[in-house]
Amino acid sequence: MNEFYNKDIISIKDYNKEQFEKIFEYTDKIMNLDPAARREICKGKTLSYLFYEPSTRTRMSFESAMASIGGNSLGISDISSSSTQKGESLADTVKIMSIYSDILVLRHPLDGSSRFASEISSKPVINAGSGTEEHPTQAIQDLFTIKKEKKKIDGLKIGIIGDLKYGRTVYSLLSALANYDVEVHLISPESLRIRSDSIYEIRKKLSFTESTDIEEYIEDLDVVYVTRIQKERFPDEEEYLKVKGSYVIGLDLLKKMKDDSIILHPLPRLDEISTDIDNTKNAKYFQQAEYGKHTRAALLGLILNENGF
Ligand code: NCD
Image (cartoon, rainbow, N blue to C red; front, side):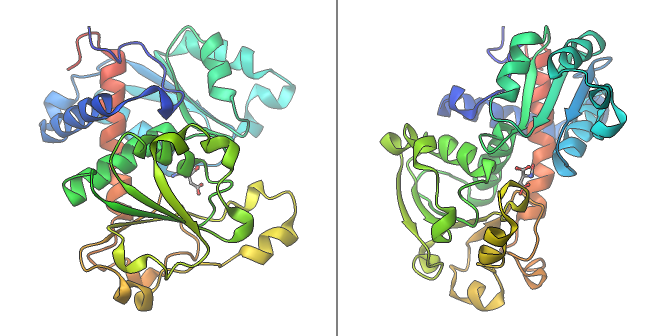
C-alpha cells in the first residue's frame, strides 16, 4: 500500500524529506504520462471543494488536476449561494460533501478548520488554506518548483519577502524547508515579521536571518520568494496602508540579483513584482502555478489509489 493512500493533507509538518521526494517522483511520472494514460489514474472519482475564501489558482488547479487524471469535481466557491447562508454548520456541510465525493478540498479563514473537517469527514481532506496557519499543497508546489528550476534544494540561499506575519504560504514553506539544508533570509516590514510562536519548532531545524532591508542579501539569493501583503487579515485598514507597497521587485533590483536566481510568488500578485519582470528568465511564478496542477494531480493520484499509479 502506498503511504499516502486515504490520508488527509492537513499540515506540511506531517511530512519529511523522503516523502517530499516521493511526491516529486510521482509528479515527474505524471508529467511524462500521455494524456490518455493520465486520465486512467482517477477515472470515475469525484473531488468536492468548499472555499470559504476567494481563490483562483488553488481551486482551478485542483479542478484541472482532477480532470487531467480522469476524475471530476464539484463544489462551492461562493458561500453566499450555499446552505451556510441559511446557517448550516461547517460540520454538517463537510458530512454532506463526504457523502457526495471521494475527497474533500477545504479553504477556510479559521486556523484549525481543516483539522476539524478531517475529524468529521469519512473521506480524506486536503487543506487548501486554513487561516494564517498553513497552505500545505502550496508548499509542495513551491518545493517542486525550486527543485525543477534549480535542480536541487539543499545548499540554496532562499529569501522570503513581504507579509511574513499573515501569509500562510510562508509558514508551510518554512516548515517544508526545515527538512533541507538551506539558508533562509526573511525580509519584511517590522510590523509584518514572522510570528515567533508559530515557528517555535521550525527554529530548531532551520537557520534564518530577519531583516527589513531587501538590499541586504539580494545579491546572494538563489530563490526570491515574494508574497502579497494580506490586506484582508489586517484588523485595521490604517495599518495596511502603512505597509502597502513596502517592497517592489523591479528591473533595478533584478540587476542586483544573481543571473540565475529565480523569482517565485504563490500569487495573486498585486504590485510587489513589477510586470516588467514577467518576461525575464528569472520570473518563474507562472511556471510555479503550472507545476501546482501537476503536484496536486500526483497527490490526488496517491491518496485515491491504494497501490499508487
Ligand atoms: C495564497 C493563499 O491563499 O494563501 N494564494 C494561493 O493559494 N496561491 C496567497 C495569497 O493569497 O496571497
